[in-house]
Image (cartoon, rainbow, N blue to C red; front, side, top):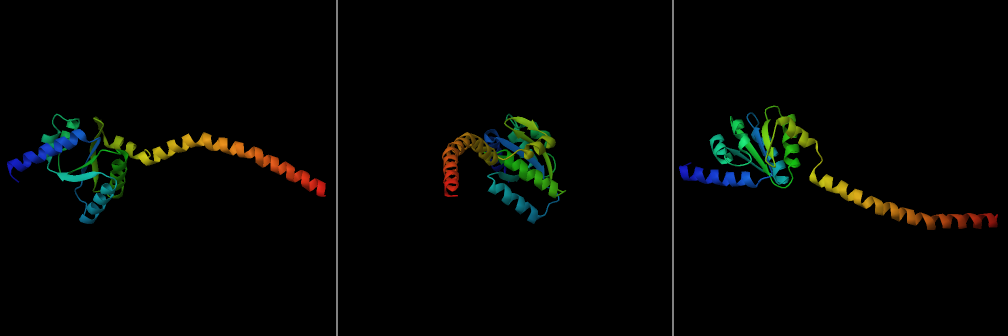
Amino acid sequence: MNRTEKEQIVQELAQRLRETEAIFLADYRGINVEQATQLRRELTQAGVEYRVVKNNLLKLAAQDTPSEELQPYCAGPTAIALSGADPVAPAKILSKFAKEIEAFELKAGVLSGKFLTVAEISALAELPSRDELLAKALSSMNAPITNFVGTMAAVPRSLVQVLNAIGQNKAA
């Protein structure tokens, strides 16, 4: 790789680091090809960009970006996961993968410009996903309407039951 290619990679990576909401670094040393492929597949399905980068290029790209605090963690084999839409999804996938495979290790992360330790990434992974939160919010908004409809339907139902009971008493 020549100097111009490296400069282009650094510029592209710096732009992605500025635009991305959530960034996670991991040490992938010791995982096999099948496990790496599985991890990439899960992250891609969640809309997360996952790639292996050279530490020096990542350090250069991180300068003057919100992810500048990640520079000390750019040592050893480093993979980076970038997510713009849902920061919980990559945290869940990476944390689950780190628990299942001892060789895979989370290093650090950045969420909305705030540095995250491994413990904070694990706590983030415990949160419900964006879709789950939206479903709960929608369910909460629908609850009063559902209760109102149930209450309004109870009045005619009760009337029908009373009339049915009177009819049975007269028939007996």
